[in-house]
Image (cartoon, rainbow, N blue to C red; front, side, top):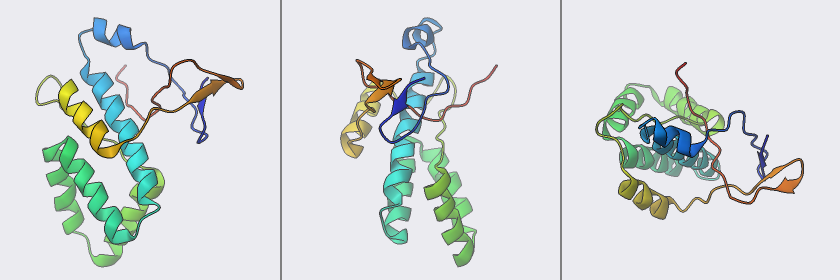
Length: 145
């Protein structure tokens, strides 16, 4: 399986054309958003706790207003010690984003804007030490079977 320079290994590879043929490109957008979320969590580790908090909530607000409100409400209900623990958990374990099925999804144009804002590039990956011709995104995604 492909492995990125940062050591992240792909566990499942989806054929992008197969997803589009099933008329659900929102899965691809969600995969892209979770790729960006992984990078946001990594960058948060390099920031002060206050800056990391601002960066995290800014990203959530950019990608899903309802998820942002829900998480912000939860965060505000915590005491100071719990807030620190929560942010550290987000930094260490990462976080996933959510796109509602069939409506109010981020479209391609909005996804391009988000990529421009956050400036994360797909990973250069190798298989058994040999480079893969095209860069890939590797992120967490949930699958319904």
